[in-house]
Image (cartoon, rainbow over all chains, first blue to last red):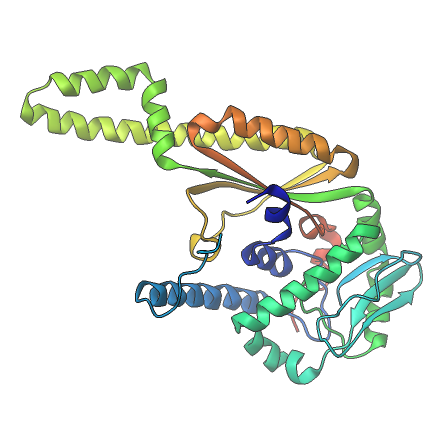
Length: 67
Length: 267
């Protein structure tokens, strides 16, 4: 993978770390609490591990084959 | 809301917004301008938001759309990025915020002027590191010889001890490596933030993540940063080190602490 492409394709985990973990936190009328953010990570992990399990069982095509 | 900038900034308003049916809007107030777009409360209201954030596809779509808007803005102007899903029920709410946070936002903009955030991750291959540990330590080499020379029973205990020593030396090398890379980058940067290593389940990274840092760099020094990273990579290749550079990012890690602390209590 060449460098320019690698940099343009931002990994979702990098994005979520920054978008939810960083930036100015201002109390909007509706805003995320720390607990909400933690829940996102918990459910992301659960989701990723369920995808991994499905791959092992050949339910889903393996990701990243095209790379 | 996406970000805040100085009022005269040419923020993009022709780019697709988070909700496809709505366009980007500038909301000017005093010396500042906010970039925002309208979203339906049915999707972004408090209950719906909590549900949707846990929907992987929804989160990915919204996060990427938010990031694309910020990237476009970043090409042209200095911005203070806001956390994903900072939502006001009306324009007056945005203006009130710009009024209240004015000093902090202006200070943050001044600090970020002409600077970029870059991410650096240091990944280490444990096997290569342990091999390097064996090569580098005369003491370990001597112990290895002893193991070979021992009788069967003694060899087992010596082997166990040797493995433990190899792990210790490798751990120390890894620590020194992370410290060296961070220190060099810090020399180059105006500011640095160390974040926790990412969860492997989420990132799928290979090897051990021993450094996950964000560095605030003057825009004119970016070419030098790339050279520095290449040099560090080359220098530490034998230790199984792999350095990942990403950026430029909207400066999520370098927004003024005053503004971040203000009103951080969720409603």
